[in-house]
Amino acid sequence: RERGAKVALTDFQKFNACHLADVNSFYLSLAESLADQLDLDVLPADVWDERRGPNVNFERFIRKEVLDHMHAPLVWGLDEVDRLFSCPFGSEVFGLFRSWHNERALDPESPWAGLTLCIAYATEAHLFISDMNQSPFNVGTRLRLDDFDASQIEELNRRYGTPLKDSTDIAHFHQLLAGHPYLVRRGLHEMASRKTTLQEMTVKADKDDGLFGDHLRRILVVLAKDPQLTDVLKGVLAGKGCPDPESFYRLRSAGLIEGTSEQACRPRCELYRRFLQRHL
View 1 (cartoon, rainbow, N blue to C red):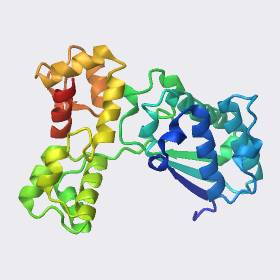
View 2: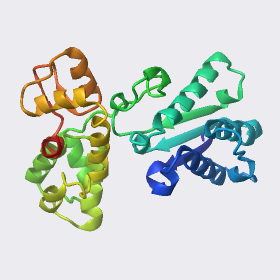
View 3: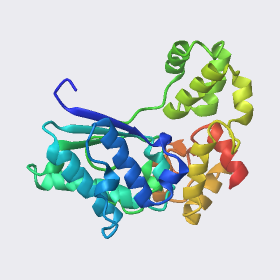
View 4: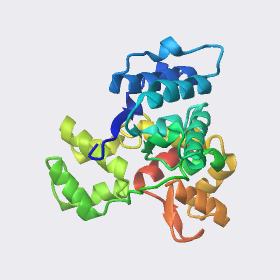
């Protein structure tokens, strides 16, 4: 904004099941979110042509109704895109985003040069996208948020009104989540807003209907599509390590394990260990 750019933010957590029912419904919802924030006069549904495919409709809307009418660059933040990882059309959407990046690189004068996507996600994309040439996650500038250490959790806890009461609570909380930024923030927010204790949160933390249930279930959905990697993860849970560098890299890049080598690895956090041991 300081440099004159238009800024929009779409949080995928606000999308209901009906918005994610199919790719056409998703694109319409995404276009409506952007049109509303930019105060566009045209409604996406009014220019949608069922004779075209969903990708074409969405791309034409962004290009003709948004970018062609803007006199400043557009920065569009997309938050919680993890929700697309388990959708059958997720790769299709990410492939379209990747194509826009490619067009920016090939033709700096094209309308796409005026669009910057900022994609935020908590679960690594390596597990979810088989063709990385169709992925927007390995191009552009990547900002990785490292896991929080105990002192950083202590500071966040203070900002949330100290739902963790002492150093023992902080140590147990850190052991449960291993400083995972998304899980730490969500856990502190839950305890602060609902006035629950660490013990109450911990009891249901790894349950399907618990606080982190949606995050954990997404991992299961994708693992179910890769039996070989699932078997490797079972071995890690049993203390056997990874059989080869590739599986070690994939699981570590996906944020499911940590360690320095195939044989010196373990589940990333106690929450993952408990949940995955029960389900795999």
